[in-house]
Length: 227
Image (cartoon, rainbow, N blue to C red; front, side):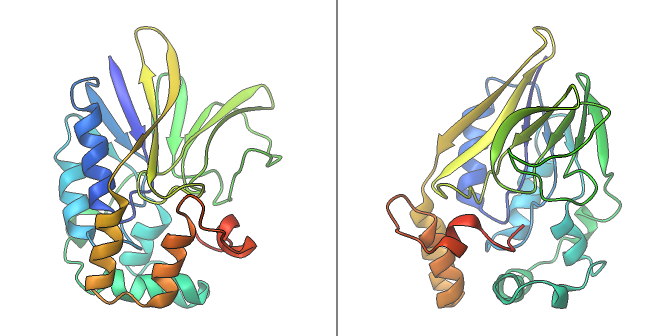
């Protein structure tokens, strides 16, 4: 059995559709680690597509909690607040994100959005007692901590290194293997829709700063405060 494990779609329908088209014939099931919503303009559409996938398991991310009003948006940086105001304006499918689980066990890994609410990167020092599959920080990596693995499957809709690329993990239960995968999609369609919906210069500049050769400022390059 082959499972595509993905995270952080963030309302980016062109990226999600490209991922689904690419994996439809090579996997039997899907696991989503959360943050389907926010930032991008297609929140309802992305949720509906994710929930239509075969044998799908959907976990809760911090942006699902934001959209349900369970976390306070005023605690976020101004850029995230800008994205939220635009993104939530047309959102109607709270029924799909209410009551989602936070963890799922498969293939010897605990799948969850992140560990202890932390931002975990490749160089993060953290003690763990099991193998984890996570998302949240939008960077794909596979590291060993305390004798266990942490695999971050990266982001479908908002890759921090190059927003025109999507990343995910492919787990093969029969072979006992996990590999990190990457593909491209039409990022121009995303930016055009954000412009059509008048997202504003600050939001548009953030996405454009993630394009190859953008010469982004250090704060934009690191994605400071954006998860």
